Image (tube, rainbow, N blue to C red; front, side, top):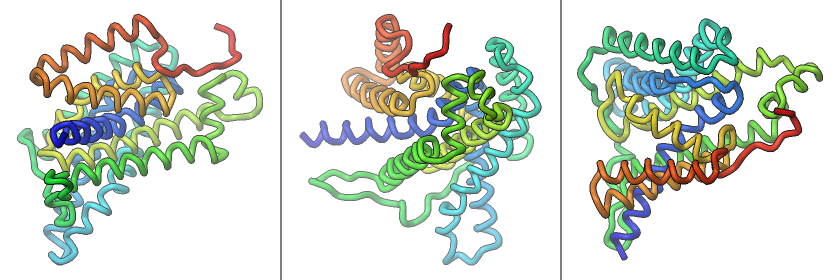
Length: 300
């Protein structure tokens, strides 16, 4: 029984990480139909932003305030990644709307540039980020130890998801994003600036990727290629859940996370990944649009 509970917790933890990584991709891919292969590098930017904040606190802030660095690093990672995402959208992506293959190749090139930039600034070897003292150790439940870092990540993902849902469904700016997502031409006819919506959406998606990078620093060391380990899984989550659907992103992330943990427990890491890919291929043969699809009145 304890083993089942622990595997379920590990699956939810992995699903939460995938959800945080895929949230930003879900809204940008769903709105602009741009295949952003540089999304992983935006995650890397958030991770290195957290590392920079840690270094500042280590060198210039009194030691008794060190634990505050991670609380400040989360919004800092969001802001830095959002600003770089806005720059990427303005310089590159806005010229490639409606050209999926070109956007894929261009953002792949941008990702390589960002990786090399990180190597030039921070070096090629991985660097470690020390967890604050309040996240060390774990919670004892029925003889099991649930790490505080994993519990914190699950809580952070829940907060990000609720905040994004409130923004999209309860604010005027969020309703404009949903309107453009459902029918861009009609939204423009009623006075919505699709250009401003595109930049805002890309900034939010990039910022969430930065927060995901900050969360990944709690799991292990970070390096220039940290984002590339998760980008394929993030696209799988978005496609399986349904492009542009928040509830589908949650379902896809949790489903892939739990099943991946179960398969690895029964077999091994490599075979578990193979089984996940096989299930996804079979599922998409049955439901090509994913678990949830956006219904509109626009004509194809």
